[in-house]
Image (cartoon, rainbow, N blue to C red):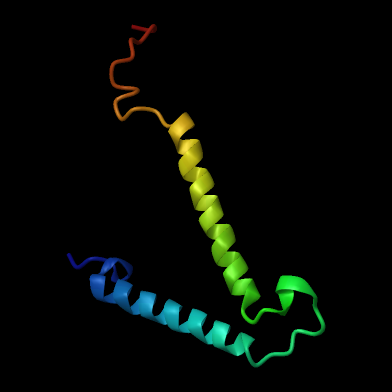
Length: 85
């Protein structure tokens, strides 16, 4: 049986390229669109893209930090004695 089209390596590469192209076009379009009179970092072209990237990286770092405290060993449920036996 042939694998689903979304899990084929060629499709995954094509999707990555398409997503990167769309994101690059969105950042490039940010240089040509007037965003009004803003102060501070909002006046930087493509600020939203950089802010989103930074927020995503911060969430990933926070998740990794939380995983250190909340993660259980792989065999956590393997050797549990059942009280209903």
